[in-house]
Image (tube, rainbow, N blue to C red; front, side):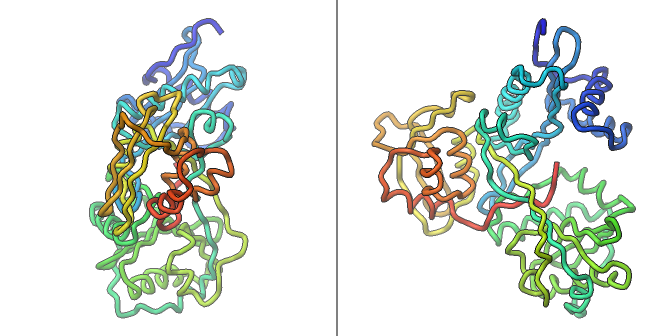
Length: 385
């Protein structure tokens, strides 16, 4: 290694990124399609590491919003993290990811999340597990008989992208969802015009599904009522004469688990994802909290990579909203680092965080109040990025 530097990836370096990607993940994907997508990140969301003039690592940041407690929080989704094999174990990945964290702050993302290929690097940089992506398998014939025939369902297209985003928002606000992503409208439009996807919409819901290895696969199904849920699942199940099973990405508490006569296949696939707070005050201010829960407590945060998070803070929660403000007169508050903060934010019980040494200090009587403040439906994602 001669001169390692973090740079913004430019179009002329995409061939080098592709080469490192192949050496990192193996062959696969359409190169032209990948390059077309990569060009959309060249507004400061595509970072790389060079040794001299040679590009040896890269990562991209998706401009997401993510639901937390039924409210939208800007989130930088880190994807395509690649390091050339001969540079692994030399601190290149850490150098790049620290630059990614700072770029997320600069871009106004108080949260960042990713699906880890390894936990060692990301935990070292303050990420911690926050939720799962669940893939269930149902009997197609079971879904076909769910009814909902009185609900009007029509085929959807590109022009319905804004409607899909609106319907999803209403659903997640009501359910106080945590974890699901809000994709840019242009991405939703591209999914709806993809001939491999089948999309249908009702007055208060929609479904997007496709064929996958002889089965039907539901990418997302949103329903604001029981009748709409029955109608949309039955629409998917109408393919039961050809597909015996339906694979569905949905949370473990989705109403389909209560509607379907037979339980989902026991071999459920789960992908875990990790979270990190890059701007702690903004992350608290934009998150939703349970109505009727009130808390006033002090925290001591120690964040070695994002020092703006480090310090003594007062956490205040009331009326479904929260704030995190500096305090000059801290009490004996909880002490935690970025991993403990991320896990707490995602609703991990304080007892578990104490058991792992991710939270220390504070008054034990406050633990149950913290659990209540950050409680809510299990965090989940529907998408892999």
